[in-house]
Image (tube, rainbow, N blue to C red; front, top):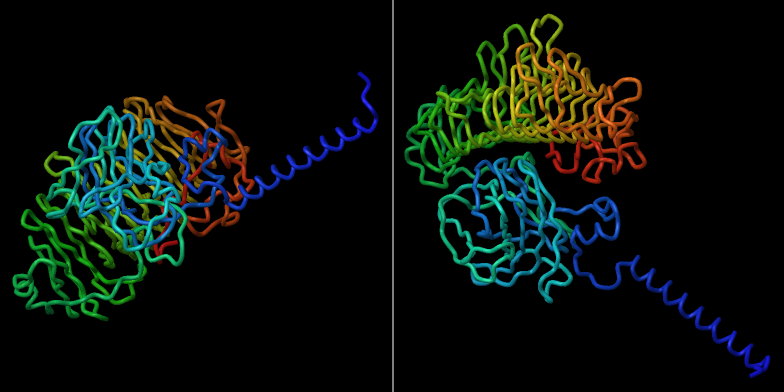
Amino acid sequence: MEVSPARVEDRRIRRIALLCALLMALSAASALASAGGGSARPVSHASRARRHAPTAHRHAPATYLFGDGVVEPDAGSTRPGIAESFPFTSPNSGTAQSLRLYIGARSAARRVVVGLYANRRGRPGRLLASGSVRFPGRGRWVTIGLTARSRTFRTGAVHAGTGYWIAVLGVQGRLWLRERAGRGCAVATSRRRSRGGLPRSWKIRRTGSACSISAYVRGKLRGRSRGSAPVGGAPAPSIHCDLHATPSTLDARVGAAAAGKTVCLAAGDYGTWYGTSKAITIAPEPNASPTMAFDFGAGAANFTIDGGHANFDSASPGINLRASSFGAGSHHITLEDVAATDNGVSFLIDIRTDGPGIVIKDNVFHDMEYPNTTSGSIRVLSPDGVPASNIVIENNLFRDMGADGIDSSSASTLIGNDFLNVASGSIDPRHTDAIQFFGGPNMLIEGNFVQGCSQGVDAFDGTQGNTIEDNVIIGCTVHSLVAAGDSPGSLVAHNTVTGRGGEECGSKPGERASTTQIRDNILLRGINWGGVQCTLSVDTRNMSWPGYGQIHSSSDFARKPAFAGGANPSTYAGYALAAGSPGKGQATDGGDVGARVGLYPRPAGLP
């Protein structure tokens, strides 16, 4: 049948109109997506990965909303299939996107499930969001995306002043966590064992073990921040004094103090204090700078020494500490905000206890020079052959000294410490180490910043099974990062090393070959060894400088990085890779090679 020219033209016009309408609809949908339109339901990292590869760097950086961002001093575990939930109150309002959880070094869980619950009459109520991760590793923070599980939580909104419960569940293996001990804390436990799902009903128990776990929710902040991830080291708050002591009345005031009270010290020399078993705080009077030492034994436990020094400034008012020790049996003691220096002794802080719960944080160790100097600032030893446990050395500043920073031969957590000009002087015959570790195993050496050094993070006399991640080590003149005689091997990952030697993994003659796992590092001079050649169990995606480093794997590469802080950054954060730098998105986890400096924010006063 013949079709008239008019009808053909009419059909052509209709097709054009339909095509235009379709293009306008697509354009509108694209604009709406760009503006954040459509469903605001949080999307899990797993589902994002199916749409984009990689995904972790395509969205705006998440910020802290609520929870516990400290690697707590105590270790605790949950049985496979048994969930536990911990209460928190959010100081901020915002949109929840992910949860950060610290997986303990002994964890064996093959999958970890997390959940966010509403608070209902002092127990977990409605499940708001959940997420999971397979093979999470151990001795590290992991990020788990949250997906809404309740219609009322489709926007992911959390509100300041509102209570929530963070739940964790280990599948196919015991899940080990880091926790803070206390008395009478509320913990919810699932009533039945699960194969992988979070429970609907809980039983509440009051416990003397876990009050909090190292876990916190991140997302988009709404309004002004009323809290931040508690990483320590903020300017020292004003101290409320309940009792007042002088050098001659300290023991009497401590004897009269009830649990929870603060005993303040007037100026003067308090000699050597032997501690207490009361849950109290020892602090300085306002604007006072008392001096003391301590020698803690089996009767010392459950208290805090708050030195009061602000911003790691040893010249500010506060407690000044001489050579001291944590002896066998002392436990659950926190030493914070003191300024410490001494000459002519072996070690400034000598730790010879199996703990648990010894925490040394936010202190400044300073001005110890050869020849009238200590061997080191902090030493951790195994007392009577019993490994130390739960020794946490976190966010301290070690500056201007010819003494070692930290020497440890027993399991301990060394995280977020700064070492500035910890080096041998021109007349000092020794090689000063920022961190020297030996023996072990199961040390966590993470997020430390070493600059102006003779030797950085080093094990020369054998070690095993440690985690060494996200450290920045710059300008060492002798050795930078050494894991000698390392068998079973340690994990050395995501470090940035620009000093001499690169990563050294050989062994002394007669020792077993090191089997260190080495991946995702920036190593100016690559991977090296002396003596017995190391057997690299993992050697992948390490970046070295062209013409300097040694390439040992087909996935290693030689390129020069560009740092966010310029050619020679002076801060830890400055060692993030700049936009467009080689190494961006080239790590085995899809992120950047080198130190993930955003995981370890520096408190005020640290570079």
